[in-house]
Image 1 (cartoon, rainbow, N blue to C red):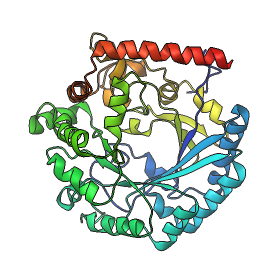
Image 2 (cartoon, rainbow, N blue to C red):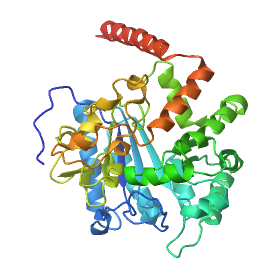
Image 3 (cartoon, rainbow, N blue to C red):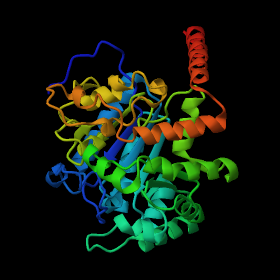
Length: 407
């Protein structure tokens, strides 16, 4: 699909770029959307991002920042497992970014499984003030069910050693936890607290409709809500303000009249761009769990600009711009304006439609769970759906007034 010449509306400003500096991983999580959901494109890409791709990616981002007068950018390093890239090479890439990106506020982040953390990595993290996210699923018996190495052995102890090294160095780190269905919620949550996590992000499992049907048979109609609601009640009643559980703050913010802070709920768009090890420009890479090539743009950093990608006609670029309509089947739902139909990849259904959007004109497979969680948060905040709508209207008026005053 060729790059379009425009979409008839101002392009969003993209401030977050995710560099997949490694296309391979040293462990083999059974639920991984990259390696175990039917897409094998990773096998054709360079194992590590070559120097020429690194520099061209930074140069494209630099051109974009200059053109749009951006003063802040966030570079997140992802994989695969990004620490396979090598600490020295990572340092050189950060140095190149600092030297060539024309912004005052440049932030670095990495998402890692923490099994390869060394003193050299710690020195680099400290030098560049890298925000560290660690993938972990809870206590050893839970974590080791799915987060295994290529020999089928659990990885919890190696993760714990990595966390200990980070903690002893005085570095903070956040948890990214794929919700372990059917496990005891507070056992998982309290383990993460005991390991020193102050920021915890619980992720809905990335599953197809067929997989979700089997999950419902095994765990009941709302296994995600059954897991999250006890943690929410614990967090609401017992946690201090310095413990952040992202999904709860996100839903609370939406209920109070705000907008979604990421693309998993709210339908507000996902203004970030992935750059693969071969230089390909991608958007929502979790679209790999869906049949077909919905996330593939055919664009790359050598032949195309960031703006080319933003204005592309593909589904992922539409998602970036916030141009994906909410599911028509959700129009009568009381949370229509707040949930937004759920995470786009979770809305996929196989159809005979020739239009890609037809495959995504459905509520999330986790719809019942989302409604249950929203209901719990609303009950604790004592904010009804109608009050959320009124709050949104009031905030929109304030925003419009400030915009007029500033113009």
